[in-house]
Image 1 (cartoon, rainbow, N blue to C red):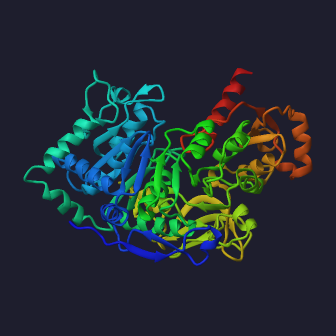
Image 2: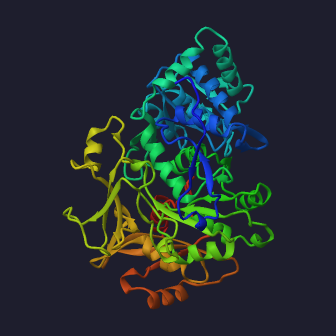
Length: 558
């Protein structure tokens, strides 16, 4: 495709008063089926409006299209062909966004790499994805990232482009890479960039996001262009995201929450995107005040950290009107505190996983506080959700079972792994998520836990997230994580890892006594460990694998 899309004016959801949004919002045309089309449509629709603001650099929607074309041209000049894969191993920056959309503009497939990975872990992803070009940060988190790959064999990798390259180091500097693209666009082959972008189809692979590997080797989840755009067009409409919003994206871009519910969402709605490299409570509060942030997404741990910050009240958070959360079971108390203490009126909870474009259910405007606080809402239009028992039979409302998802958002499969795909998506097209939940009579989904995290105490099923929510209801507990640990008599019992609120002196004995009054005996943790902080991954999720390792280490040292 060589032209632009015309501006499209559409009414917002009929219950827009819930979000106090304008009556009419501009959005990118609904017939966009690919990200190249979306980038062009956003440039035509929103033009000179600010798209990215990153550490003093402002990029409009029109300028972003030009940057994507330039980077796509640089890929072409490097011999990059449609269908090939390029990866990004970097934190949230404007360069990440340009590189990601340029890969797709050039007909390629984006592969994302977790910034917390070490060299060998990143190399596994690069080799599994047969990546030919890597866009990489230089210095970050005390490491020079390209050096971490020095000991790894990467036979398919032809070039590493470094965003903030050290002068004395090899590889390609980002600015030199862009200059290559400018030269290509000035030459006779310039038209091939638009020709290739026009040939990208909605059912072509857009990205490959690798699973965390907590249950084995990471698997590459393939997602297509059109299913990504359809999913987050629905999400942004329900949320009421508009071009008036200023969206601080803390969730890492390598995750669907940051990339799809962040970058793609902002392109769809003309929203200004402000990247945040790492979560720092004081810095985030300062940015909300100074940069007039209106939209903040994140896992529950992010909001818990903000609420617990001792100097929070000195920051003006009045512009912050929207928040989305998910990625874990959420305590009702947390939702109430977000509203009461942070002043956020619109809070949407949602549920999804990489295998269904990151989204399967979400709350709706007009839902009661109880529904938003205690569920992840209902299935997206065109998506089915059910809960089944161990025999695969659908369970009654209110009964816990494995969550199954079917619809346009379900992945076509895992990369080069038909056996794993067949084990995850059954013959009827149902995605078996491995999550446990319940559905109410209205179809609202409440997440109970992960099947793999469940443990059995004396014959009773124990779901850590349920126990964690009950522990967080204690007035002295800021954060809690529960794992199952071996017990000679009961098989496994709960062990709680806890962060006290500032100034609290709660003892294990007092907490144990409180738990016995609040929950069934088999759920009461037998072991309590107070820590200054819980180990979190880059997405803000508690690393249960590290907690289990810390427990084993403590047992070996006794």
